Amino acid sequence: MVGIKEIIDGLIETVKSVRTAAVLFFGGAALLLLNLFLIWPFSLVSPLYITLAAVAALYGLVVMLVDTARFGSRKTQDWYGNRRTETARKVEAKRFDDEAVANLATLDDIQKRQLLWILRRGSQRVDQPVTELRQKHIMRSVEASWKNVDVVAEPIWAMREELLEKYKRVPDESKFPTYRYF
Image (tube, rainbow, N blue to C red; front, side, top):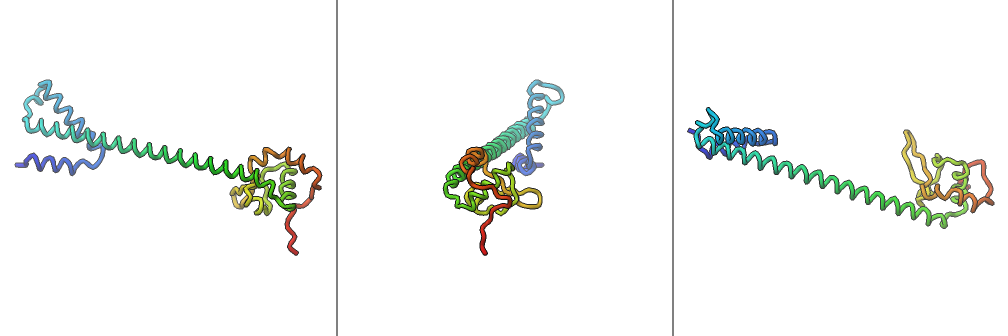
């Protein structure tokens, strides 16, 4: 004959998932309630099996509660992690925007003419060599299909009319201004 210890050990080994725990909980609870209300033939069940049903129901309930708490904890951690990442991204973007505006004062003549050339064309996206402007966060690199395209930073683009008015005496060039190395 199988003893209670072997049955409980087998029960613990069997419960590997929440589904099994739910079956144990609802099955054990159903047997307990049917026995409690003296519904035949469940009123004739041995007290040993009623005890085992109570243990199974309790064990199933504990496993379901622990799994629910673990799931909730994981979701909460994901939510906080996403919020932290989003906040860090916004702080970084704000820092880059502030640097871009501050770096307008550091532009040399060629960089200033490059920026004016872009602003005068009216398109925020360009496919020109603007490495120095990108390093100063005035331009942002965006991957567009098969090649990189640069975009004027939002705070600089918002200042477009002001910058064009400020530098209206700088002549417009037909070709994109570049450094002359030779």
